[in-house]
Structures are given as C-alpha cells and as structure tokens.
Length: 274
Image 1 (cartoon, rainbow, N blue to C red):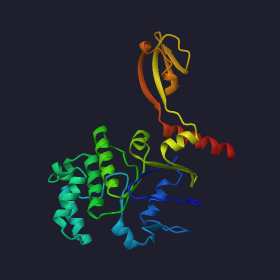
Image 2: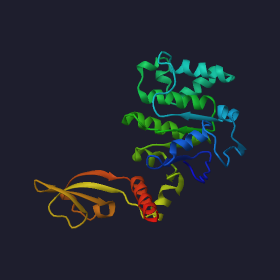
Image 3: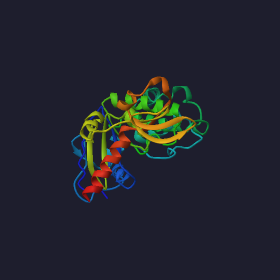
Image 4: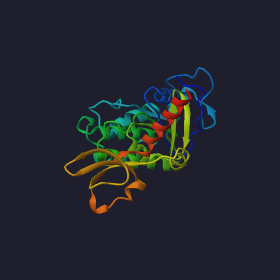
C-alpha cells in the first residue's frame, strides 16, 4: 500500500525506484502504467491527468520476465505488427530508427526464439522508441541479464533518456542501478523516505562503499571477517583501503554498494522510529 507518495519525473532523467520487498515499488509502477487506479490523489503526464489514451500513446512498460512477443517473430516483425495496431505513419522508417536506437539492427531478421533474454528485452525498448513514449517504466530492469546484455541495456537507456524522455526503473542489482540512474527514490513501507542524486544522498546519510580484501599480515584498520593460511579477510571502506600496505593486498572485491548501504540506513532509521 502506498501512502502519500509524491514524485516528479523529468525528461532526460533516469530514476531508480528502490526499496525492500513489499515497499510498494511494483504497485507504483502499475499506477503509472494505468494498470491500477489511485484511491486518492492523481497522476499527471505532461501536465495533464493520466487516462487510458495517454497511457497507450505516451507510456511504455517493460515488466519483469519474458516480453509479450511471439517467439516466432523477428524484432522487425514485432515492431511492424505493433506499429500497425498503433496506426503509426512512416512505419518502415520509424521501425528502422527504433531498431538502431535499441542496438538491434544486426539481429532484426532473426526469430526471437534464437535470441538472448537481453535482446528480447531490448525489443521491448525498441517498441517504446517506436511509439515515442515519453515515459518508460522497467520493473526489475536487469533481472536475468548477463554482463554483456546489462552493458548494452545501460547504453540503450542512456540514448532513450537523451532524447528528452523520462525513465523509471526498479531493480535489485545495485551495481547496475548506481551506474545508470541519475537519481534514486527510496520507498519504505509505502512512503518516500529518500529522493535525490546519489552524491546528495551519500552526504545526507554519510554513505560509504565497502570492499572485501584478502590481506597478508596483521592489518590496523577494517573489520576482520575471517583468517586463513596467514591471510586475513577484511571489510573496510575506501578510505581505510588507502591506509593498507598495497604490497600485502592479495584480492579486492566489492562488499557493499552505496545503494545497499542506503537501504540499510533507511531501514535502520525507520525501525528505530517505529
């Protein structure tokens, strides 16, 4: 259940909607997509109240899981089919442009059943290009994608936003969210508890990015997680990492992203206030 949620989305901006399970992220996405109606308040797009005709022409939704296309169609055929349904003029040229923007030209004539999940996801993105949707909604944006597909999707979303469109996405892969989002909004129990650019929230909540390090010897900083064969596994922030003797560092990997720290901090503060 959402309670008093107020949020502005701007053209050219990619916004990440974050929160623990049950925070209300998917419900909010469904409201913007016209799949649910608010009990009170209103949703506006381009300054006008949202209604079914606006959703069809100006909003595109990519839900978690497989896109709703026949596996026997090619990306080009999918776009031509939906383009005819939408009554789009200059359809062939618009389809070619959408395929290019979604980085699909090389696979445009191959049936979807031969393509990766990430490529199918980008076919949905191409449809958003085709209908010139001003708002793109992605639920669990990077779920099920390999490293290459994630990088390609990130570039495609950047191109989409650069055309003056707004993008709102959810996801559990915090590394992807940090890399692609201009701004993040955190929902907690149906309410907005944080909204801002990552560096702004980092200062407000004193957020840190933590890494894990295997270190040879006895360190003077960090939290010891385990010891094994003369090596110590440490958890430390980036400032502490700089204090270690680099000659003794054997391995470094990300332990906790800034957004993961944000989720924990807001959950801790809200729990303390409850």
